[in-house]
Length: 114
Length: 113
Image (cartoon, rainbow over all chains, first blue to last red; front, side, top):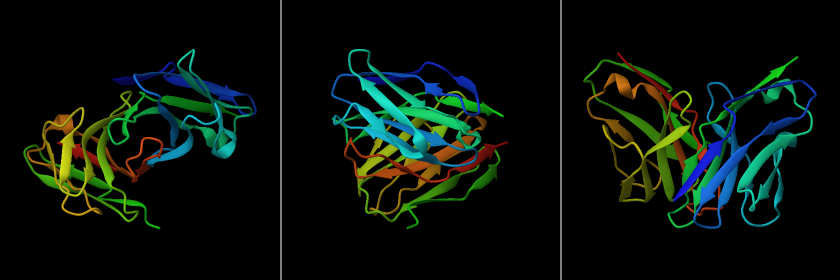
C-alpha cells in the first residue's frame, strides 16, 4: 500500500523569495517519487523524479527536491520564485509492484505575488 | 511528437447520455490510464491498462468502461452520464516501469447537466 500527503493545499510567496512545497509519503517498497506541475487548463508536466539514485534531485525551471527516507519526505524547493511558477503542484508515488501504478497527492496551489 | 492526444477538449452532456472520450499515444507505451480531477482531490485513477487486451479497475471505476484493442488507443466510455461525473478527465501513458514518469494529455473538460 502507498499514500501521499501534501501538507499544504495553498502556498503564497512573493516573487524572488524561496518556495517550499511539502510532501510526505508512505510506501511498503522502495518508492519512485515524482513532482508534476499543472498550469491552468493544461495537463501535468514532469518537474523531477527520484528513483533511488542521488537523494537531491534537480528538475526543470530551477526546482529541486530532497528525498529523506528517515522522514518519509520529498519536499520541493526553489530558491527564488518567479511569477510563471504560479500553478498547481502534485507529489506522486509510484508502485514498483504494479506496473508503476501511481498515487497522487491532493495538490498544492502556489500563488506568486509581485 | 504528438505525445498523448485527448479528444474532445470540451463536452457538455445531458444526464443519461452516453459518450466516449478518446485517448491516443504515439510513444509505443504499454501502460495507459484514465484519471479524473476534481477540486481539492488531486487525480483519481478510473481505469488502467498494462497492454493491449488487458484492463483493470482503479480507485473510482463505477459508471465508466474501457477497452484496449491497440497499443495506441485507450477510449473511456460513459454509459449513462450523471452530474457526479462532471469533471476534468486526463489520459496518461508510460512505459509501465515505476521509475518512469507518466505523460499526460491536455484533458477533457466534461459537464453533465
